[in-house]
Length: 469
Image (cartoon, rainbow, N blue to C red; front, side, top):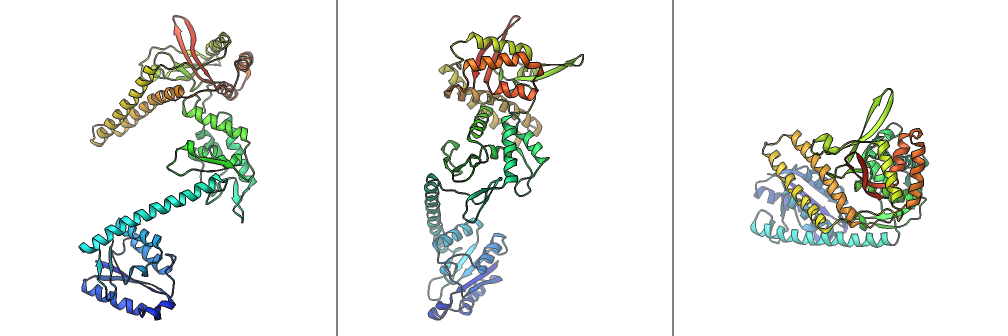
C-alpha cells in the first residue's frame, strides 16, 4: 500500500511544542515501517498557519489523493492538516468517499488507524459530525444569500452575456453583447422557436466566451430577469415560482413589457397553447381534434404554382388511429371568425368536469408504468433502442396533451385581449390574409388564441371550443 506523509508547523509553535517538521517525519516514518507501508511522497508546509487549506503542501496532497496516487495518509495530529473545523470536516467526508486510510500517530497518545475497529469508530462519528457541520454551514450560507436577495442584493459569480461586473461588482452593459440579447428577444417575440434562433445566432456571433449557441442558451436568456433590470435568486432545489425577484440598480437591456410578453410565450409553449416550432403554419400547436384530442399538424400542397395550406390530425396522419378529416387554412379562418362573432359576451374556456380530471390523472399513472416497463424491456434486450426512443417520443406527445389539459383546468385566465379587439383583428386578417407574410400570420394568430378545438359533422365544420390569450 502506498502512503503519503503530511507535516506542518507554524514558526511560533515549532519551538513552543518541540515538534519540528523533522521530528514529525521521524515519528511517521517509524509508523510507516512498522505497518509495512510503501512511502509515496512527503508533503509539507513549513512555517505556515493552519487557519485554512489554502497552503501549497496540503493542496498538493488533496490533488494527488483525488487522483488516487496513494491510499493511506499519515499525520502527526489532526490539527496539522488544519485548525479550521469546516476544512477538517470536508477532509473527513472526502476520505470516506475515496476510501482512503488515515493514520494519526501523535507521540504519547493512542494511535488512530481507520482500518482498526477504534479507528473505524473514530471515522464513523467524525463523518456524522462532518455531515451535520457541512449541512448546517450550507443552511446558514443559504439563509444569508436569501436575506441578501430579498434586500435587493446581487448574487452572481460572473456577469451574464450583455453585461460585465465593474470594480464595485455592479452590472454594466457591454453594448455589442447587449445587441445580441435584443436580437434573441425580438426573434422569440416574432414567434421563432429557440432551436431556429440558436442556428441563426451561430451565423452572426458566439457566446460570451466563444461558446456556440444552442436552444438551452436561448431559453436561459429569454427567462433571465436580469435583462429587464431585476436582481433575482433561486437555490437549485427551489421550484421556479419561488424565485426571489427584486428591483435592480443596473440598466435594463430589454423593456419590462417585452420581458413579460416573452414569459407569457414561454408559458403558452410549455402548456401546448402555442407552437414550439418555427414552421410557417399560423395555427400550428393551437388546433386540436375533437375526436382524439391530438394537435392538428400543418401541411401544404402546390397546384398550378399556388400553395394551398391545411391541417390534419396527428393521430390520423401518424397512426391512422383517428377518423378526423383534414381542413384547409381558409376554412379554418372562416369558422374561427364565425365562432368569435357568435360569442358577444366574451370567449371563455370550457370547464373540465371532475371526472375528466380524475381520468387524466389516471392516464399519468398509466404513462409512468408504461415508461418503466419499456425501460426494463430495453435493459433486458427485449426492446431495441430505436423502438424504445420511438415509443417514448409518442408517449411524450400523448402526455403533453394531458398535462396541458390539467394545467388549463387549474389555471384562471384573465384575457389579455377583449373579444372586440379579436373580432377587429380577425376581420383585418381575413381581408388581407393572402398578402401577409407567413411569419406575421402565425404571430398574429398565436398572439390571440391558446386553443381551437374543431369538429366536422357531415359536411359542416365548426369550432366547439375556443380559448383566447
